[in-house]
Length: 200
Image (cartoon, rainbow, N blue to C red; front, side, top):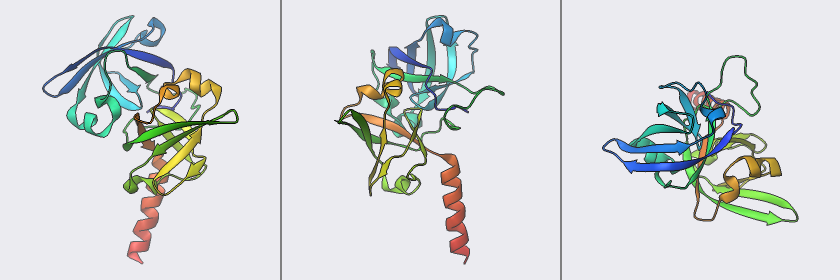
């Protein structure tokens, strides 16, 4: 589990195709990798990945083809910047909202700046947009954010300077695909409601 509070921005050091998918190595600070064990979970752009090995400068992960299909990790290359968060420990503060690291889908993004405000608009597939609630939580590239606007096939959040500085969301372009994780409580409650309606 994760909290949606990005702890660091890492840089892709190596990115190689493998038979199962990809092997990626990510530069990170020694404070982030300290006591990081093989098999530990790390959120990379909101995707829960398992540490293959690490040292005080970097971490290595294997990414399977299914994960590459669903997420934007298929788009990364050497030099790409990714949001990082270590898994939640019992007793830690939950500064955002609880995330599983299981990305629901990905969508094209657009950064809109107007009157000092920074709006991030993200396209969302029709099978997921119903689970995005106005003023509800959503995770974008692993960052916990609040939905400010919702349209038929997209939603928007507003980014404060702290979020812009602490995440890779400031680097979005109209060609960027961002990972979306729907709030699990929203998804569960909507499905329960639909099940009750179907049963009459």
